Image 1 (tube, rainbow, N blue to C red):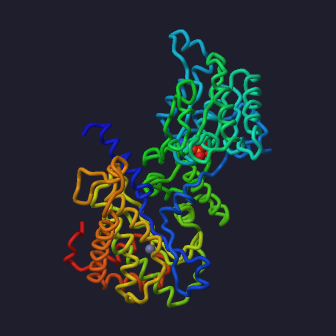
Image 2 (image 1 turned 135 degrees about the vertical axis):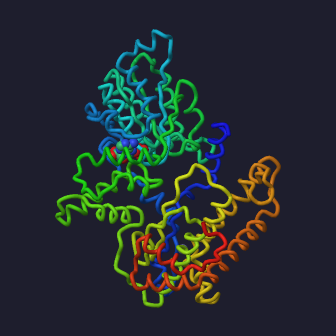
Image 3 (image 1 turned 60 degrees about the vertical axis):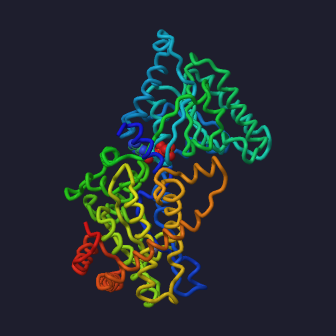
Length: 516
Ligand code: ADP
Ligand code: ZN
């Protein structure tokens, strides 16, 4: 398959499936418990991970104008490319800009025009700010940083004034790097929610950018995690015409980031950064840094001589799911949560054995979680129909287990986010991925071209119904394994993945249809 074609498919799938590469499920029982005694209100850990575990450790607050709007001149940033691991592609592109900042004539001799603006786009915490700062540090020029949200004010004209002030200061400095984080805050597509203030601010930015001559040695670097939402005017030639993707690190990249951030940390011999890199699928550079720091804090709190594997493991669970809290559920609730979690684990073991179960817990964790399954997915570029269907079944298995054990009358609200997530996946299969008997049709594209889709909801229902029945059968066939695991969970409250896998494998019936 041609590379671009593979990349296109991968990109489409990734877009269609969002965070689905993470197969975590998590139940949460927040305030709702007060009214509904044994309700598990679910938050899929997928969403939770995106919002919390992957939240960057913001090390840049000081740069973003302590006093709102005050442009802060960062004294030559004590940071260079050696502070950035991974991101080879971005570094390559930025090193050209560094050469240009150091000697603008180098490229001028060839008649090459340097971009005035560079847009770094990608998920939070992937090192966009770090890269911009490192560019300034490498070229030994001042670094001016502001966040797009600092420009957006209630009073028309205030933001525009700030933009002009920023550029005036920067020009006075001579060569420099201007960094605008969250540019989407001021550069959103203008058609939706038009705002005079934002328009004026954006216009001010565009006209300042057209106003300087590339030979001045001023480079504007902007960052966003929503390139799709940007006003196209920003992306035109002479503006942010160089766009560099800063993606989540792959396994080898995670390893190099972990190595970089553990240089100053005393790691025990039992720590394997390779294993940690394998386990941290979909972590950003910032979450990896947070993870190591968290482990260091844990080691320091227990006055350990070194940071041990167990410290990293505790830090890992804390980063992904939040810290464990003591259980407060009644015995009956505990049993329901255990059955629900055991259902997820069982389905995952049978239908997606390539994913590695790391932990199953019925302990309350961060954000009101009442229990969770943590599963490190196999790292792959593409997802097939089989993977997506398996993922749907794994999501539905919590509810199926509840139904199999306690009966339909006793279903709880605990599966709410599991079934919402499963429904979204089924809709993607049908609407976008051509995985429902019409391999050549994207119903979504069809509807864009020719209007409404008829029958899509019914087909979604049929797919979900079919997969739910399949999951329920599987659970019923494997009742012995389910009971063994849920009993063990009630007892232990939290189990490492290896113990769960061994226990399940000891009780699964031999004639499993899909065991791999
Ligand atoms: P973004 O601007 O993309 O949200 P940041 O640049 O603020 O991300 O990253 C936050 C922190 O995460 C950095 O200060 C650094 O400690 C760490 N980090 C992120 N990506 C990398 C990387 N590629 N190499 C080394 N550290 C990184
Ligand atoms: Zn669940």
